[in-house]
Length: 60
Image 1 (cartoon, rainbow, N blue to C red):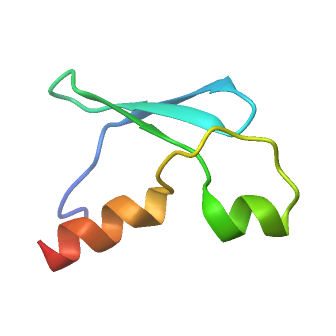
Image 2: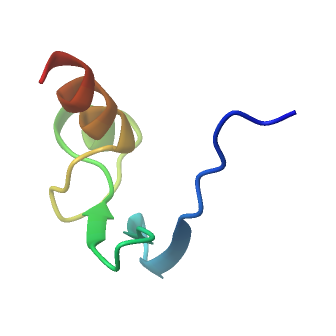
């Protein structure tokens, strides 16, 4: 039994850049930034992490 099924499409754009498409058609771009990129020695554009969206939605 399922209470809610999320239908989201996530695609790799390049490197650590990902794009999610929500059922409404809205797109959200995410990747890595700051200390996490530095720790893993990644050359990446500063983009929000997926967890940044989770924290924002919980705190909002």
